[in-house]
Image (cartoon, rainbow, N blue to C red; front, top):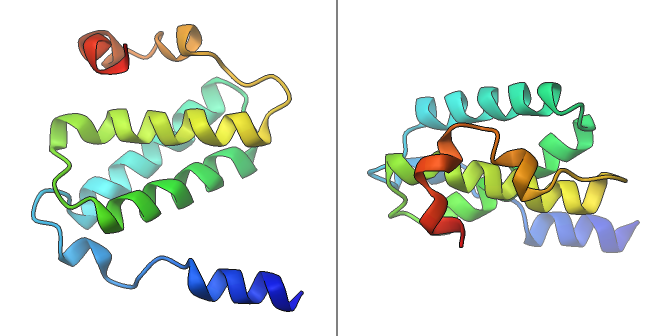
Length: 111
């Protein structure tokens, strides 16, 4: 148990990390998180999957301050894809996630 508490303190998300980013605001992150929950519901993913995806998103955004608004949704889907590989018995593939309209315009970024 001490190991887990130590990891949590070392790898926690810094408070106020979005104030350092000029391109992503707290409201943009909120909209993205709401959208990730909608995707979770439409694909019948576990709640743990979307919670892990949000954790991955926060950890990524605290260090990557140059994410454009156009790529923010792609980053969110990528976090959801990675989290589903950990949490889901049958994770959705990229073909299934491609049903989301945003990936059609980002096809070159994926391949």
